[in-house]
Image (tube, rainbow, N blue to C red; front, side, top):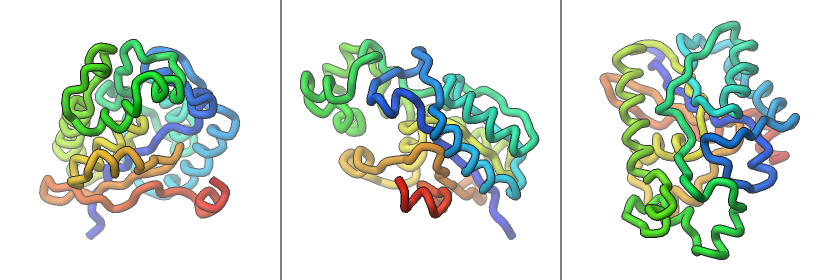
Length: 210
C-alpha cells in the first residue's frame, strides 16, 4: 500500500535570496528567471504524482511558485497562512551580513527556541511559534486528506519546523541544514504519524550544478 504524502516545497530562487536581504512576509520579492526554471523542473517531477490539494503561503514568491506548479499539474491552489514566512519584525530590509556584524549569529539563536532579547525586541516570531502552526497544519492534513497526497508550498523555516517536529535536532543542525530553492521535503503519514521520507529532493542535474 502506498502511504499518503505531505510534500513541502520551498519557493524558487527569488531576488532576496540572490541579494541576501531579509524581506520577510510583506516586502515583495519576485522569482528570478532561474528560480522560475527551478520550479518548472520540480513541477515535472510532480506531474505523475496524484495530488489532491495544493496549499501555499500568501507571500508573492510562493504564490508565483504555486502558479507555475499548478499550471503543470492542471489544478488550483489554496492560500493557507500557516505556511507564512516567519515574521521578521523590524529586521526586515536588513542584509544577512549586516545583522551578523551588529548582533552576532541571530539565525543560530533563532533555532534554540529559547528567549532571545534581541529577537524579542525586534519583534521576530519565535521558532516555537513556527513549529506550532506547522504542527497544526499537519494535524489538519491527516484529518482532511487522510489517504491523499498534499503539496505545501512555503519557505525555509516552516520546512525546517516540519523536520524539527519529527526529529530531535540541535539548533546547530537545524541552522546548517539548508533547504534548496524549489526542492521537496517529503513526509509520509500512517495512523496519524508522520515519518521523514526525503529532504532536498530535486532533479539530479541540480545536485551537480548547485
